[in-house]
Image 1 (tube, rainbow, N blue to C red):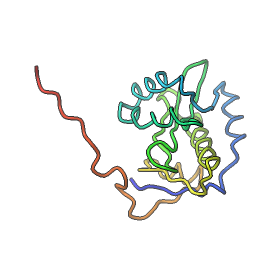
Image 2 (cartoon, one colour; image 1 turned 60 degrees about the vertical axis):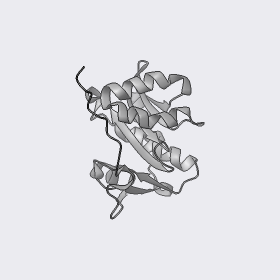
Image 3 (tube, rainbow, N blue to C red; image 1 turned 90 degrees about the vertical axis):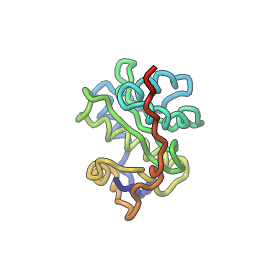
Image 4 (cartoon, helix red, strand yellow; image 1 turned 30 degrees about the horizontal axis):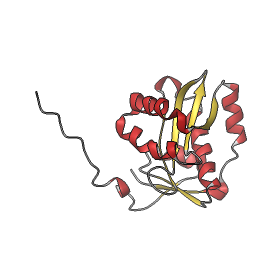
Length: 163
């Protein structure tokens, strides 16, 4: 999966995405440091411990760099930026039952605006899976020869020995 580059000066407007989410009773906002346990539990449950580890720097940074989608006080999606590396977006995910409702789009656009607010002109989507989605929503372009990028030589968990 290639990394992708996003020109942050040409982002779609954020407010229409937020309004669409409000019409579905979904709030998009940044996580607070005191919500770290709830965010970590959501990410671990739905996407695994590696992603939960990856979002931790964003939960502790000021301003926070993890966007949440919340309905009725419950997390239904998240997007991390400026966690893995400077100007990087990801990981991101939406609970399976909530997919296909525009939540991922809203989290992506909010996160790209977050990178722009931090002063970046370009954002990087690391190891982009659904490249067509990123191209369509924020005009992302694949970076040639960018795979596996920073994800090469990752640590792997050892199988547990039988006791």
